[in-house]
Length: 268
Ligand code: AMP
Ligand code: MG
Image (cartoon, rainbow, N blue to C red):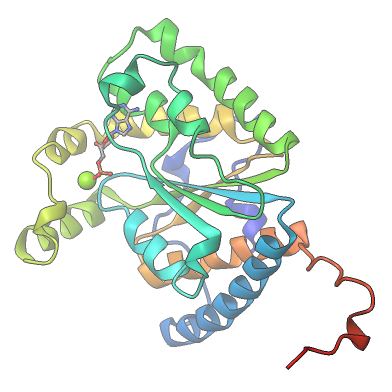
């Protein structure tokens, strides 16, 4: 699959209803697993260079409906990485202290330092998604946030942070199946929240909110990718491929060794 076809074209009016969450591929599941492992080796090599270079950073934003696969993607895609060079932040309902600041305050604090890969499990986009659908702030407030988000992401990108944003796109039927599995599995019941049900009932409102967020905030310096995610193996492969391409484009290099290393003798 050509990844540029997964990018939400900057400045265009976009609708998720036009994207099939099954996706299309001529790669088999077994072949995808093999390719994934090869790509993960590459990803890990690129991460080593990014960390050693310490000049640029990568921010990966993950958004999805409940059971859309944010946790699973993070767990699988990054499993070969050096934990020292990455930081995952899961954004929850804001605390009283966080709510006492502007909505980007807690987010900026978790932006990746130079050399690091920062992964956001949910993000500042919640402030134009759940906040909009549940009318937690007046419309004039959330409407002004698209421009504020674009300005914030430009600030990060102008200061050496590359940004990629993934929307893991599942169908409403797939969500139902996954939530049912979650209810049955003792290892996953903890993930089920009664609060997920009203969110599911407002699926259409969420899709509208996503359409606007993705249309308004996919930019050249911080593109949104829509990942068909009904099939987990395809989702993992696509996300990993895009990350490898992004890091290859960033082209991190090991710092030059100190001069004279060839004549160094390590003392006994
Ligand atoms: P989970 O990702 O399942 O742990 O759930 C986290 C919950 O926090 C989700 O229901 C999110 O929608 C919610 N959440 C995250 N950020 C915000 C925010 N800025 N405002 C309101 N709710 C949020
Ligand atoms: Mg949840």
